[in-house]
Image (cartoon, rainbow, N blue to C red; front, side, top):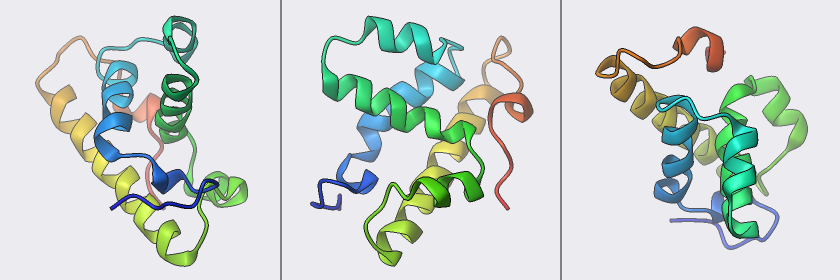
Length: 107
């Protein structure tokens, strides 16, 4: 269940973020191209959230895109689910970028 706090990343739905994470990390479309092709501010926000997969946990904690400890835990769980989904799809896609370059390992 998404968070209702407007300052919390978890107010966004996993499936909506996954669409752009898939485009970025499986299809290899750059974040800049995705942002340029976005039609709405909502799409741009989802693209920016998907691009947070490039950051390590310490940088995410510094940005604090969550409102509480519970949302922090659930946000990192969401990131792990996205990373797993990307790994699975890349395993079946030979033209994908190397995961080690685009997704830092979880500490």
